[in-house]
Image (cartoon, rainbow, N blue to C red; front, side, top):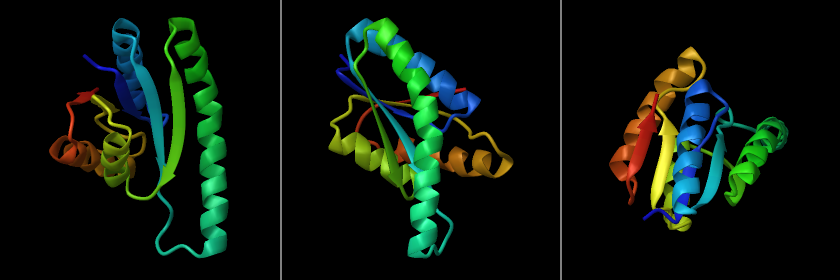
Length: 138
C-alpha cells in the first residue's frame, strides 16, 4: 500500500510524533522512508549568509537524523534523509512528487510561535497540493 513515505521533519515535538507514526507505518508495510527537513533562509540573503545559514541548518538536522537512523535500523526500515532550502510547503510537495511518495506524514505545527503560524499554513498547503495522501499528526 505505501512503498515510499516522506516525513516532513523540523525537530519539533509535532514532527517527532509524525516520525513515530511514519516509522510504524513503514515497518508494517516494509516502506522506504525519506525524512525531509527544510531550511528557510532569511530574505533576501547574500551568498555568504546563505552558505553559512545552510551549513548551520545541515549540521543541526544531521544531529537529529542520527537518532532517527538508529530507530529506523532497529525497526528494519530503510531510511534516507535530506535537507533542502526554500519554502517548506513547496519543497515538501516537490520532493513527494520527485520521490514518487505514496504518503506524506507531517506535524501540524512548528516549535516556535512564528513557526507554528508558518507551519500551520505549510500543512494546509501540503494537504491542498500534494499528489498523494497526507497524514497530519499532532
